[in-house]
Image 1 (cartoon, rainbow, N blue to C red):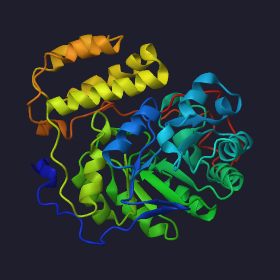
Image 2: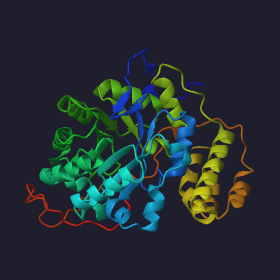
Image 3: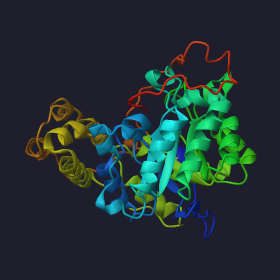
Length: 392
């Protein structure tokens, strides 16, 4: 069954050799698909689940880790930074911070003691408490500061490849992505990724794929990755063809749909995607996700984590919405099984769920920046090095 939304009607499978493998230093990612780092989402259990559906062919990046908290050994940060046994060959982590010295120290620990294979840097987080501290999407507003931060991590990483991820800018009146791409290229990062929305947009509206194409025209010596509105495997084909980018970064589209990576691997190598799961297969995946979280965090914490996923897994299936209040209070694996057991298994996957809103609402924001941040854009002084943030 070829399930796709009307938006992707007529999109053809990849032709033989149409899309090259993505090369990030010594890492070869074929097909060129990357799991976006998402706070509270892309922990080791979720990465394991996504990897199983794609035979470990994509690159799966950890959620954002705060450099200062990591250097100081905060227990929660160390847990979130840890890798599964199935990640021996590709340990990929996203690092956040505003102080070059702290970031350099965290990088050395990750490389020398943790044996990471890839470090991504967060310059796109739009969360208020992050930008108000001069971090995340605020950093590219000050190109000299961005340059100093990137240089510190690239030099400290040695042979381990560093990539950077950023947004279009603060809002439509203040674009920063071309400067960010140029600086990344000049300072030796191995790839750049653009979430084609502004920080003011958050996750609303449509991603501006034209900005990805523009960045690709300006950044010519390293791969350019596109991020934004890849909800179906067919979206990735359209993005690659329309923008000329070298790979796709998948975020919200895989929430409650980890099998999306298997579909992406198929269509990007010229194969039809596997049939979509029926409700029974979705329930099995949900249960396995909960078990992985319970094994990793302990049952109590793992079941707290799975609560937010339940609505994403069941999105669009008739008769399941009534279960959500109880699922959002589940405490044990046994309780989860009991709630899911009465549901029928032979219900086809609903087309409406392909592009349904997941995780973030449709609001926009006025971006919060530190006092004087916009009046001294040539400054390279650190505003604040946060102890810990939970970004998005």
